[in-house]
Structure formats: structure tokens, C-alpha cells
Length: 226
Image 1 (tube, rainbow, N blue to C red):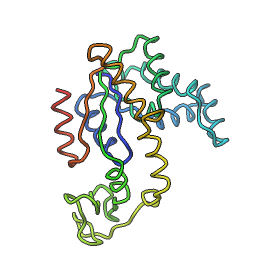
Image 2 (image 1 turned 120 degrees about the horizontal axis):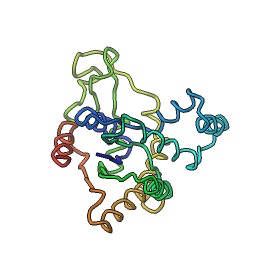
Image 3 (image 1 turned 135 degrees about the vertical axis):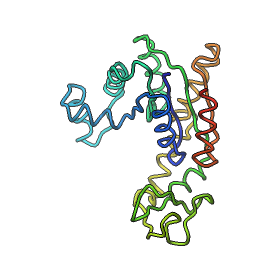
């Protein structure tokens, strides 16, 4: 089961990816982790990537994609994998598809969590962290986990916010890239949907409604994955 996973910041993609990982015993692969591992190990690709990162530049696809391919060939990926966080735009989608085809690696499933931009932004900015346990779910914009005033709904502890959750400009910038259907991440999603339509439904496309709670989205995902 080889999966590409898409969803905007605020959609709960990371949570659902972890659930798929545990359910099917496949690695949840994130590009940020791949970068850190290659840099820490001092691989040739990692050293090249570090040079770009140290200069504050984006790491080019000519380095990122080989890193991803190397990760997908590792032993723990023999039963499948879930790739999260790449591709981020149309060009990367096309280049990744080409590289995978050259390596004889098929994509089985493309999952997209569908969530409108306004709701995604509210979910990010509405997150509140319990000082006693960050795993206690609290969000002022989600009725099911709305806190009791300024207190944790689970334990009554004080709540705080993460500074990046309140940076509306940064959130808008990330979402502008994701929701761009001409050249951004959504253009990449459309690329794989077109591929599926031309290839008789391969890869299989799974669209998930991201508006319900985590359990409901998980239930829909598991039913569609079979």
C-alpha cells in the first residue's frame, strides 16, 4: 500500500497519517524528517541540502526527490509507505511521478482531506494547549472539543497558544500555496487525479471530508481503505 497524502495545514492530516501508519504497519514518511536524517548522517545529498538551508534557500527538487526515492527503497518500506508533505506544487508532482516510474515504483492510493480554507485557518488559530498535557484536545472553533472558557475541557488546567498558530500572515502564505489550483499543491492533487482518470482508476483516489471530528474522519478513511 503506497500512498500519497494531501491536506491543508489544519486539516488533521498528521493525525490521520499516524492512524494509517499504526493500522497498516507502514512508515509515515515526512520530507522534513528525511532532510534532518540526511543532514545528521552527513550523506552527500544531506550536505548539499544543508548548504541551501544554511543560505536560507529552498532545497531544489533535484536533491529532494533523490532523498525521497532513497527513503522509499529502505527495508521498512517493502510493505508500503505513506508520503506526507511532498509534492507541494505541480512541478514537484510531475517530477516525482516521473522519478517513481523510472524506479518502477507505483503509487497505489492518493488521499486528499478536503477542507475549505476558512475552516482550516480557524482550526489552526483556535488550537489551545493545556499546560498539564498538550495531548488534551482543545479548540475554540470546534464544538466537540471547545474548552471551558480559558480552562482545559479535560482537566481544567490553564490553556496557552503557540505563537505560530496565531501568525495569520504565515498561515495565509502556506494556504495560498496549498489551495493554488494552477501551480500549487492543489494543482499537484489534480495532476494525480487526472493520472488516475487516464489509467483506469490507478492510483485510487480517496477524498475525505475534513469537517467532522478526528474519529469520524478516521472511520471514513478506514472504510475507504478497506
